[in-house]
Image (cartoon, rainbow, N blue to C red; front, side):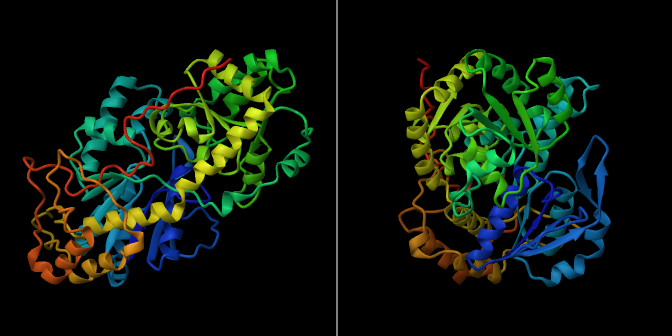
Length: 482
């Protein structure tokens, strides 16, 4: 299968979207598929095992770390992209990448999948403070619903985010497919090396946090919580890895709270060793974001055997299981601090939760979740595409697309999934998905409609039960503090 990905963000810009794109693209390539990624040119780029096209971009005035693609380049290079004979377009961001990717896909007669990575409703008021937050939230909801309903299929990293989009009025077929972690990369780390490099005594109690230092990440909560931890564990240190627009404010807050000697800001750490050492050095990983669509850093920490103390909100709720090597804290600094103190004072509990965390992280393997994404691509290729504008050519799923879908499947990789009872699924579980795909190939393009399902039809055609790694509705139970 040949997949064209397009995004307004990618490394060296560090965030969860970049990590998700890189993880899936690398895994697809390892599985024998061809990936082309169109992303902004930041002036520097590390080599990738897939094709990476860097194009001119502009700074965003309210967030200079981010870029926005230049539409003109995509328009001017349409012929070259058409010659690549892609099977599917996967859009990863809702800015120029969304509109340019959608226009390109419709022009080429390709299906469009879009990943909804970011809970924008909770973000905009942090960056546009002069506009009433209620207006911004309404705008984000309507904008998101319109964009989601533009494409053929949606991917979201958590059931919580899927529920939010359903509340917006999104009707597009969707599946929950979280990003996996590269267990080889996060299978080792040298905590002693990190402590030595940063002058941290081996015996000093250390809490660690990694992530973009953005206003929506709720890092100020961690600083307020640290005051209460320090009252009981005076020598505690909180190390924060990452950069972002909120760093200066957080540094100022730390000084105002009397934490100047108890907080270490490391800046960005490379994912090829330094970050692993950082996770491994911690006695506990702390996380307080309320708006995560998944929370990959939790899994990375767990994979290295570092127990987690975190809020179970939005996407993180689906990671933080009682068996996952974590202590779930209430959304109040006193309880969060109590959970941290409990871990710092109990080496046996840290060891037990760390071992559980490492085992649990194995179930979030990147290759397994990449195969699930490929399976979902296949469902998209086997279904009618969105109707095109009268001026555009009809969109059909050609034989090459169907063959590409069939090539993503093998018996050993098939995932047994039940379909939603409230959806008139296009698949018949009794016949099996592989058999149906063979029928699609045999029937040829004439058997496939080019129209979008009518509103009266179920919105989620053939979409499996969300691909979570635990039952939906099985809410995590906090482990009470002593």
